[in-house]
Length: 616
Image (cartoon, rainbow, N blue to C red; front, side, top):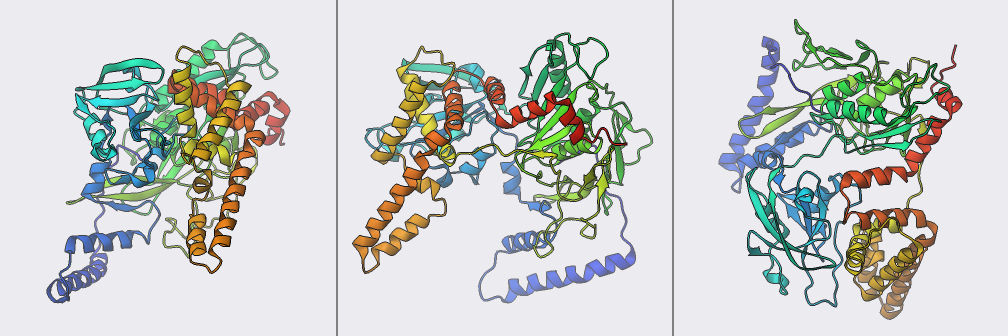
């Protein structure tokens, strides 16, 4: 989590501290000098110093690190067209972009659907590889007319396709063709499944940013109680204002209603689901702005503490950012928009909920403003503030304080003392107990523990169909066959057709579910051992049976996890025509955890019991 408006460190070291520091520094320089002059081989001093720095920092917390000039260059603002393409038949695990694994990059891209890590290669087709669009963002490529499933033919007149895969450019080369100076345009020529001929569009390049609030919608709208849903994806610089606009939008849609929790008619929401799943954080002050929308002005929201000189300990209040004990605290005028006594709130979290989003969830939990519901029992447990300090070469990403929720507990997880990476301020007692406003017990240094855990059903098969590109390829083929169809949902006929497609692709060898499922490559190791065994044929036959049983077992999920597979297939089909915001809205209304949240919101007795509202 980052903060801004930080003062420059000014602490002066005492003479004794300086002497203590000088001795190990002198020893280090002496060793380097000896190695440079006398070691048996030539050494790379720069590489050696970087390795030693990284090793030194590894003894601290998990987040303090040295960033080399090369790593800093990778982290520059993404400037492009707002689309992601993949090469069919090539796994993203084997591709690097700016030195980063493409699969890792894909996993970090927020999307309404689970993006594939590879695309199926049709072994019977003459042209085996092509660059296809797997993500097209609103505000960027989507608005220019590029859609998921489109196959790129040329970029600025340069062909990137052909029958000979060896002459085709790499994914990194295609990426570089799409990148450029913000404000310039790039000409993209492509084909679309089900549409004859080539299409040409010009797309304006820009700094690609994902919205903090991609979706705000009504889940239920009636006189019995209107329930809204907001997806808060990140705490960017616009998070506070985006949340304010989202709440205003939902309140304007809420009908005049009378609720047991109200004494008069108004258009206040009866309930709100705030989705923080996969929100890895951002600006702490934006989280404070969001919290300020739910509490009266000058409400205590928490604090931050550290041992160093980067920033003095400070406290946070709604409507006020008290920085570095400044003479005049920075004022952020806010107005409470939601009264939790009138509008019940459920916060959704998972293991990827981290940093600023944990701070916000902690405020809701400690002040008993809402119920925390999650897939996992705890959030990540990253409760630290960081700042990048420029160095002559590279930068130091420094952890300088930990933050604490209103009850006084620390969000930062306590790490195993036997591990090399430790929690900062290791002396803190993680067994200390804290309490919410209503007297509920809270644990310390464990992230945010949920009030209610709900584990929706999951499907191994659906995960494999996403990562393998099976959903993606079927959606492209279906779109080609039904170019003018307006899909509303996946009916039984489409579902059966998709199942047949998966079986055929498995039989043709284009799809190998058993290998994708076997991520530790145990089957490959067994095959190597079998080929060298005395009973080679018998061993290989046994291995074939094992593979068949794995596939057979996976395919039973078509019946056991029908709802999950249909939902993901439906989103993949719709992403050809609809923007991400509409897909998120549609997905939320069929999301199992969202449905569980709505149940809690509609049951006043259950809601009050969870929050211990009747405590005396």
